[in-house]
View (cartoon, helix red, strand yellow):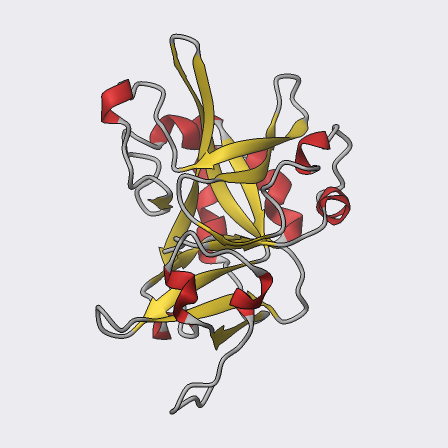
Length: 230
């Protein structure tokens, strides 16, 4: 799964990465970048299709709110969506058919060990390039409230990442991001099975990450464990 995120990219670099022509002022001074411990319920920047058939940046609440959700029944476990069932699940199927997005991140955390003594690990690219994740987005409206939200798709972990968790995010190759947003839903599942993780590296980090209120750059620094063989 993917439940904590790092976003430390420069706004200009993100625009360049996506060859984005649309105005991206929302990336400047929004507080969504330069973050090292992003939790569900926070806002993430993402690229999605706009009303004119182009692409645009959007700030989206991490945790998809279905259009039909009642104000007192908003789900709290929709920050991830299983790619195997996303086309059928009521919370996600309409968004999968019509509203797909790409969520760029710098890295994410995963935990190992027994409950009460879990050790966090930081996953990122060895070249520190952006990691593009497959996501879905929705617009939820109630009276005068309008919320754009998103979820991140997951798939079965490969041999490398299964040492840490049985699920992992759906990573998109740079050249597949447009297909993900604009492609025919019936043909997109191939992207769930072409995930490449060779460029990812992982190292243990401070357990301060466990506290979602703690957020500073040194959280991603490697620490040495007593039996550290990574």
